[in-house]
Image (tube, rainbow, N blue to C red; front, top):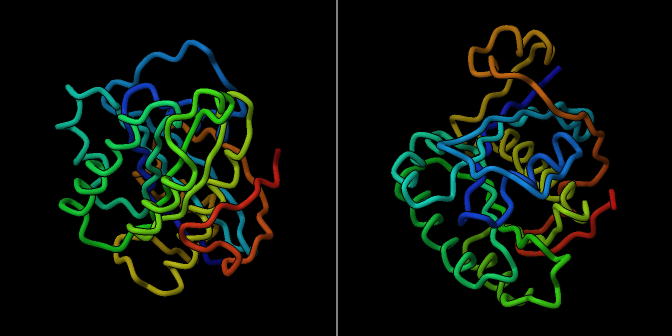
Length: 224
């Protein structure tokens, strides 16, 4: 059976909820007291899309300025990037543009891009409009979603979109660093040195058609 293994890097300003968004999806948990990421953390999860297992190696990078110089080593050879900002913080949205510039300078292959406005549970404090997020996402060829890691709202569809993008990329062969195997996923995990980290995650069958996910459009979450 064909299996796709892709590297996903999560980027964004300090405190936007990158780690919380990942752990909400991968571990179905949320903590009000999250220690700032130092360097990067590693997670994995598997989603089955149209009967094809998609294995995502997720790198959660530090948002602190002093760790920014380390970021290139984590997003080198990345197949997808999730760019997270806080809808109540304009500066965090503006910083997304810097991360995109960094990706363009350091990643030569095509990537699946997804811009995510987190903390919609604080809608009354919103500083960045949905329209502004959509407009920018369209300009860089990215999908756009809004979510709340705290309330578990809209998080699942972000990762589903990434998995769908990786599957589409594997069919189009538009990224030479994306790994596509014909072996069973368990055999791949045993063989690949890149999967030595603890594999914590959930498996979810996604029935959404690839064609239903359009760049720059929002998709209602099916899990919340």
